Length: 178
Image (cartoon, rainbow, N blue to C red; front, side):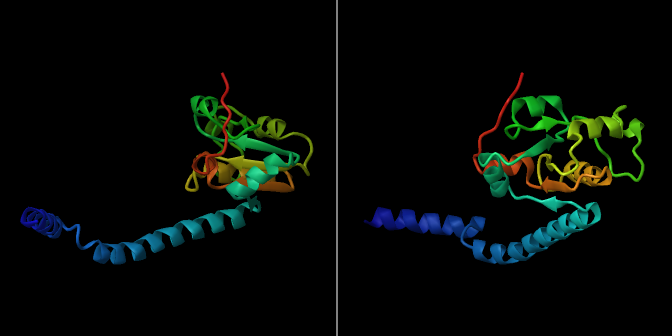
């Protein structure tokens, strides 16, 4: 019994020395910093959506849309062909080349791809639901793609801000291709 008390006292003393016994104070400091970070990200996303003129769809709603066979085109804007081939949201097509935020389309900035190439990928039906995603919320590729879809006259454009990371975070199925 004495040995057990000695072990417990040693663990407690070690915890105090290394700071493990005081996480509540560190937690109080970090929760405020974390909230500032969340707020900054939320406001950035909101401003992008307002500026782009599109809507957003959260991961669980996109899954419901897929399960209900909603008529839509899903566009993956991940920067590498290998990432798309490895895993993408089921049914998604890839627009591999960057779509920078710009007033006028500049093929020099899109590796030679024209806005006509992007429009061809999106299709002729300007009323079709279009969902554009990238990797994660901070990625601007999905914003740029959605904003350009709106500029090209598409009416039902959605950005999936969580992208493939949120999709996989929900353990939803992914597709791969060769």
